Length: 185
Ligand SMILES: CC(C)(COP(=O)(O)OP(=O)(O)OC[C@H]1O[C@@H](n2cnc3c(N)ncnc32)[C@H](O)[C@@H]1OP(=O)(O)O)[C@@H](O)C(=O)NCCC(=O)NCCS
Image (tube, rainbow, N blue to C red; front, side):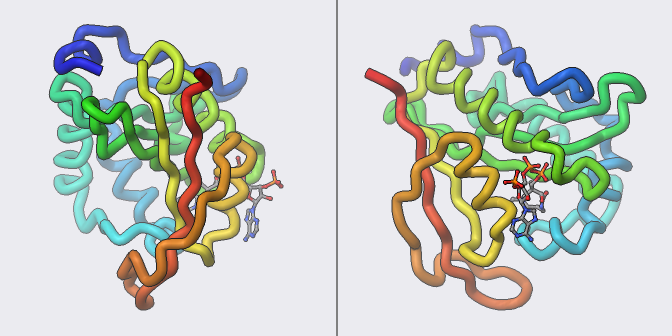
């Protein structure tokens, strides 16, 4: 992949079902992001904490800039009718030279268990390995995070192994399960 190709292309349209809509992040989402990060599960599985609406707004600014800077692709998942924030799906740690990226995600508690996250991860990965031009998309989660492992498997990510003691969370060190999907040759 060449520098500039991604930024020059349209951001992906992701089919995730009738009830949810992926869209670019807006600064006005900061309050909902701050609220999402009050969820104990998000606090447990993410090292990062949003301690204020201003901090959440700064993250959104980074997520918005990431496409033109070719460092990421971040989408808000919102309810198609009400516009309520349901979750986040993203590509991060882009390496254009290698054609590699990582996928990241969360959903708010009220949106969980209906397959939204798996569909969003699947749609973003299909775009990345197709029109996006990437060769390999990685997905990592704590080995204790069984829901995240289900998302990985349902979205077609093969298991590749365990990185021991790789993440330091608030409750201590976690082994990390590595999954990946490759571009079909
Ligand atoms: C992980 C997460 C994104 C899943 O979102 P979701 O929208 O519920 O995902 P889906 O509905 O697509 O799939 C969830 C799967 O996990 C399963 N699951 C949920 N809780 C589980 C648990 N405690 N143990 C095992 N499986 C669990 C569900 O049954 C479902 O699998 P199934 O369809 O085979 O029944 C969501 O729980 C979340 O945001 N958690 C907190 C943040 C997080 O962990 N992010 C990932 C960090 S790597």
